[in-house]
Amino acid sequence: MKRFLTPLAAGVLALSLAACGSDSDDEPKSADGSVTTIADGKLTVCADVPYPPFEDFDKSSPTGFKGYDIDIVQEVADHLDLELVVRDADFNSLQGGLEFATNKCDLGASAMTITEKREEKITFSDPYYESMQSLLVPEGSDIKSIDDLDGKKVGVQKGTTGESYANDNATGAKIVIFPSDGEMWPALKGGQVDALLQDLPVNVEHEKAGGYTIVEEYATDESYGLAMKKDSPLAAKVNEALDAIRESGRYQEIYDSYFSAK
Image (cartoon, rainbow, N blue to C red; front, side, top):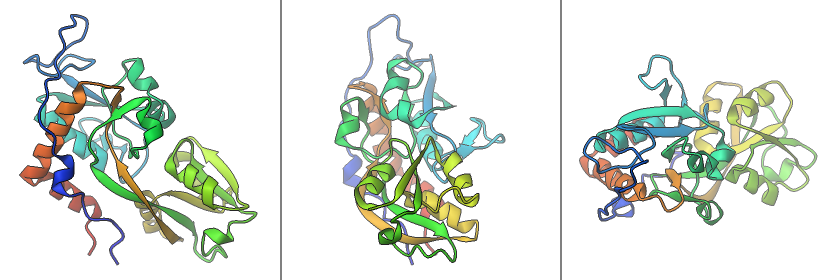
């Protein structure tokens, strides 16, 4: 059964090109002066790692990272004629805009859902992925649905839509908040929590490890976007790049390599 939503329609990402250069002398630019970034000739991207299949560590990669988000921003960097640099960063600092306000990164690529609350502090690109939430439990668990979580410990990631969904729908559950999936997953394996409620693709990766099963999926109408400083002029260039990637067929190739159902 196909678990993942089909890619967004091509028209969603279409956006007319707008100028995004800056005349400020203290802001470095790409070689042709068309793109303003925090480091000359580089596109610095922050992600909360690990969060497979979207981002993970990879010492063999030129950036030191791999994943769906990493592949997408590599294409964006190539389109903008910039070198990709990836930094591990705290998700809460990304969604709150701190990483951008302190000029630590140009983009945030961290499976981040576009929400009105987040848009108060940061600017998003056009959507590049649609997602759902899900509930993962050990095989043999008596938890068969979200209605069985009364008195159970449920792991969620701080500041995520998974946390919000659990707070709104997991009646009677004890919500245990973790900084990232890097702590949540070991907690489930070690028995510190009874279930994980988070993005479907991430729980699918854990299900593949064996011994765990997704008992429910939740359609939440979520779309991921690349995050930037509030009102960043870079957004127009990023959207242009996403549109070009889709038109060339490269977006579909990347999507299928991670999410194609057999």
